[in-house]
Amino acid sequence: MREIARVLADEFQKRVVIVDTSNEIGGDGDIPHAAIGGARRMQVPEPSMQHRVMIEAVENHMPEVVIVDEIGTEAEAQACRSIAERGVMLIGTAHGERLANIIKNPVLSDLVGGVETVTLGDEEARARRTQKSILERKAPPTFPFLIEMRERHYWVTHRTERSVDMLLHGKKPLVEVISTNMPVQFC
Image 1: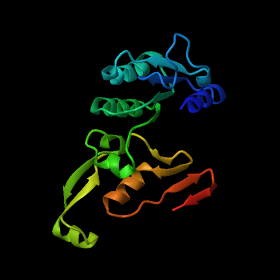
Image 2 (image 1 turned 180 degrees about the vertical axis):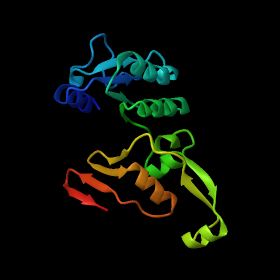
Image 3 (image 1 turned 45 degrees about the horizontal axis):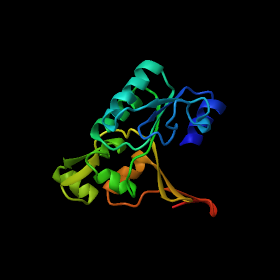
Image 4 (image 1 turned 120 degrees about the horizontal axis):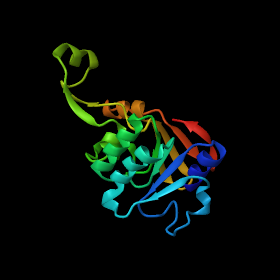
């Protein structure tokens, strides 16, 4: 995350704000960690205030990019959606083993578009060869791309909207696998 912040701020000349709840990205002293380059850091006084600091970052600092570590509450997920809807690039982390875990998590599912039960008509259900009640994505995802870090050197990249829709329809999503031990693969 530090390197992403540095590259965006220094090499791409973006206004980057890091919302740093645990001080893991920007450092915990008065002087930000040198590895974040020209990115700004906003420390969060208490974890329960992270969503407020996220919105404050957008309203008061006019960032082009906001970086948030450990999105874990409904308020933080709503703040992410608000930031994304304002046209600010958002980079964040959330705990979940796989995309399917985020979809099933009622607190975090909004990050990938949320899920709702839809009742189909008889004709539509027959045409889709499915039950009348199905799960569908509720809205566009907050994050257009999602990376599962399954191991330190093994990542799975999703186009969030497409992957969520495929998973909800019981299909395996088309993903890009990145491993430092082998070339890029599409699965």
